[in-house]
Length: 556
Image (cartoon, rainbow, N blue to C red; front, side):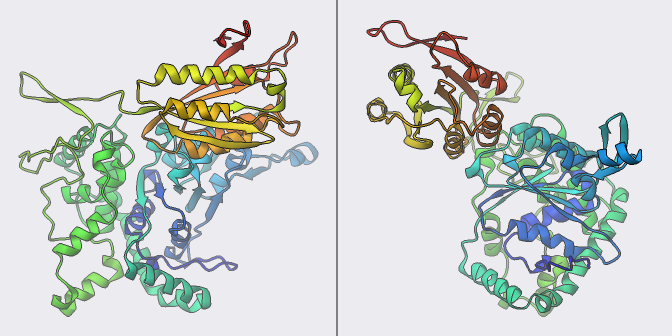
């Protein structure tokens, strides 16, 4: 098996408690056109350890690179560029390979993918889907093969991924911290054994990893020979419709992933059981019924453990079958193949019978027509509004007495929205830092108190404010509106480019942005207006009329 001489990776078969993630990765190795895996879950659960362990599944004859993509990567570093020195001095067209080309036939891993620039993520996902890409530079066009398993990981607490980008990942898995003491104990013991003697530990699992690697290689060779009946295509489409997914990508990926699963288990055709086994991977991040689809952690495992016989009642042959590494992801033979159990609103079996549905937990409304059909009516106002105010309370704002008018705007919006069950948060920029002075309240009195106690002075540090906002807008149950009230007089060490980049990095969870420009004077530098233009925010001007009047703001 291929290994970095400087680094010995943890064995794939030795990893405990991440069976779904392991299976999703294996299926992408069988068919890279599935489009990768997005791992969503807790930090410190061994996501990176598992992804690196994939190198242990490759035979010694293969080159299996593992490329870790840094968050701050440039486009040239990602796709490649022309060596200008060679071009000018030696008149040679030398191309420096990008990370996507280097990851060919391997894994390209993006940790905290939700913080990666959106356009770079688009490039990655397009290449992962097609298996190749072109570099167009200085009048030169080069073609590169780039067939890799794209793996992204993210912690929802740090912000979400754009729905368009999340949909481009073929599969997704939710990873939770194991709660069972026995599982945690085993993970800790294995970690100590590996750290104390990694060579011996890897050797103990060598045969198991090689068995899985052989199974993957056989599956890749037989993939295109797997038969898919029309009834399976209809089954996948019905499943996608039930989950109200947008577009046809889910239908296609259900088939692709089920085919890879069937090939991995050396079957000749895809069955509905195969589709059911992988359906959650495809639909987790696409279904419009996510609230009712999401299962409790370890729910499947607990139910399976209740239904399965204990080890004491198993024969020796049965124990060997269960514990074999080749059967780690074996589909249960005793589970009926005629139902879909993905939390959908209706359940249809192979005979076309529809079982009872539970509509109490659904977030959608169903309308019965005179033709005895069920049509889904999606609600557009499910998310509550959450107004986040980022108030520049620096010295320049205090000096011009603008801060009083900024307070008036916040109070005015809060007063107008108090009957709409709206939540409000306030972040203050004070003395070069950001302070989260109010967190998600709908009580107007608390808002008024926070504004009265607002401190002023010092420098404006918008970047620090954006970092605070990243944590505030991580709750996907709200429709977040960000109102930035500033005069645009930035810290000397921060440029407008720095501010725009920081906003794009930390404020991905915001739905609507508004810039209220508080700059005064006959001659204005216009930073706030330019910033609003760069981030495509609504731009308004804070206007002072008379001291006795309330503050006003108008469209810029």
